[in-house]
Amino acid sequence: MRQIVLDTETTGLEPSQGHRVIEIGCVELVNRKLTGNHYHQYLQPDRKVDEGAFEVHGISNEFLQDMPRFHDVVGDFIGFIKDAELIIHNAPFDVGFLNHELSMLTPPRSRLEDICTITDTLAMARRMHPGQKNNLDALCRRYSIDNSQRDLHGALLDAEILADLYLVMTGGQGNLFQESQQTKDTKTVLEAVRLDPNRKPLTIVRASAEELEQHERILELIEKASDAKCLWRQLPVEQ
Image (tube, rainbow, N blue to C red):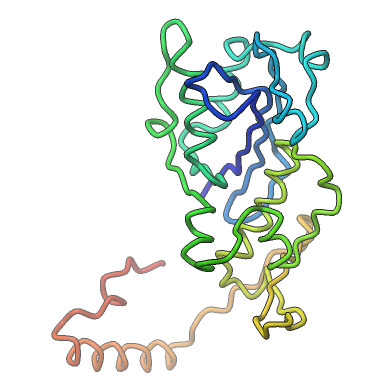
């Protein structure tokens, strides 16, 4: 399972007002593990960065003046994300800007939704924590993710932080996460634990014949109780 955690920085808030993408940052997850592969690119937007946007990300017009334009790098960008699941915080914002960039090409390129599946972690966080702040900084505090290097927003840094947040928020893997101290409101916080990529593979312990027989007896009971709707029986059997 290949996932790309993506973030952008822009000249302003609305592509309909002529604002453009000036930075793209992506990090790759395969089977819920960071691979170390990433895509990062600054872009010349052919317009000025709004003062309010500059205060957020600190990317100046002078810094961008010699950077490539989106049409120069779109092939590499699409090649990196194609057929992956995109993990984005407030996806409508980033997807809207990137689709606008793709639509301005000659000829126009396919929308992101047509080449990737998209998961919005902001929508996910709002379902998990209704009525609370769910921006990246608030979520980092809630889940004890270290974002001490994040004085200003940056697309690649934010993508790396979001990757940690996504793994913690979707949880459920004991070998990837550990429980930390209780917060003041007694909610348990999960911390992402980076595993050594060079560690030895986990030992696979196969079920014994006796265990398989006991398992089959349980499935038969579930099958009878559920009117032949036992989901275990519908799963493919690994050899």
